[in-house]
Length: 264
Ligand SMILES: NC(=O)C1=CN([C@@H]2O[C@H](COP(=O)(O)OP(=O)(O)OC[C@H]3O[C@@H](n4cnc5c(N)ncnc54)[C@H](O)[C@@H]3O)[C@@H](O)[C@H]2O)C=CC1
Ligand SMILES: O=C(O)[C@@H]1CCC=N1
Image (cartoon, helix red, strand yellow):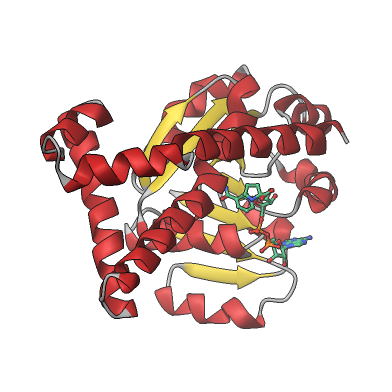
């Protein structure tokens, strides 16, 4: 697969790492404005680092755009005369609709919107995808790309903002839960490094239990909750303090904000 990542910043480089670590590209072009800091990627042999978006487009089949929203339209205008029917356009850009992309490069283009998260750099992204009508023919290809770097789900475009909150911002939410658990473990006597190790591997184990068993979280909670024991004591205190409620409210606040940004 000949892949170009247009805008190799935070997210673009995370995607590049995910693809390179799984040998997912025959050639890869990485573009950005200041290329010095990513020149080292050329050590991979099949990677070309350049400021030339047109060259990257001409030499690639799958184009993954990961620039800031304000730059996207200008870059599409710059490269659109080089787009052919071999190209699959994958946008990671928050809030930039399929309709708007179509209005710049045409309805016949295969356009996919994707919402990965930064765990893509370690092959564990939850990535949501949607496509325009033409792009439906290439959605399986896009899923195959993102499944190499985690798990993907096709959703209607109307749910992309909600998916951004749960999956992209979600990385930050889960980090805070892990950090809070770490702080608790330090208070119970573990040193900081041990505390984080305990917290993150327990978190990983909890998610893996659900993924592998298909069970509901309460089923797994029942297994570790001894009547009159310490687990239920802790859980109930967390709920008295509003654990579930504060998470749900945070998610809804985040969704309201992204909806406002979109309208603005
Ligand atoms: N799914 C997720 O977890 C997240 C998604 N995003 C979305 O991803 C997009 C990128 O975000 P970040 O990676 O944080 O941004 P960033 O600012 O780190 O990266 C953007 C890159 O685009 C490059 N760029 C700017 N103009 C260019 C041009 N004309 N040609 C080629 N490259 C150019 C910049 O040099 C920069 O390296 C945003 O649209 C944002 O909405 C952002 C954060 C998280
Ligand atoms: O915080 C934000 O607004 C962006 C969108 C998803 C992740 N970062």
